[in-house]
Length: 155
Image 1 (spheres, rainbow, N blue to C red):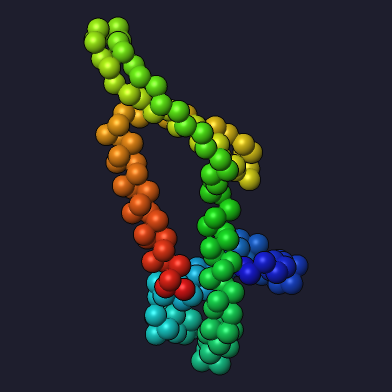
Image 2 (cartoon, rainbow, N blue to C red):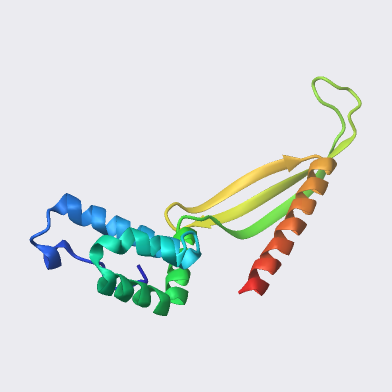
């Protein structure tokens, strides 16, 4: 989970494969829930109760020691499939007429977003916006910047 070697079924040969993978997924879920605060220590104790007190305490101790490392691994895992903005270009033009309106005189901004995805490579997304849409986009970006600053300061 933290970038080390994965658990192998070969180490647990007596366990049926379907039960092995179910146990691995359950363990990952418990570790995620405990590390992210989704479940409390008491809730996890109750879930792990059938394993016995000693084994449960060992598991909780191992998770608490590596909590920061687990959180970083979870963040990396969640960012793995994200698209990253590599560059952007923009231009503004004036639309003087359309097929429906003879005297339009509206400015239009064209925004080209050049993105990078680990799986799909480079891609360009083109968006045309009116002045009102540009204003809303700027406000949303300011809000996103404030939230990112808040998250960065919370660490």
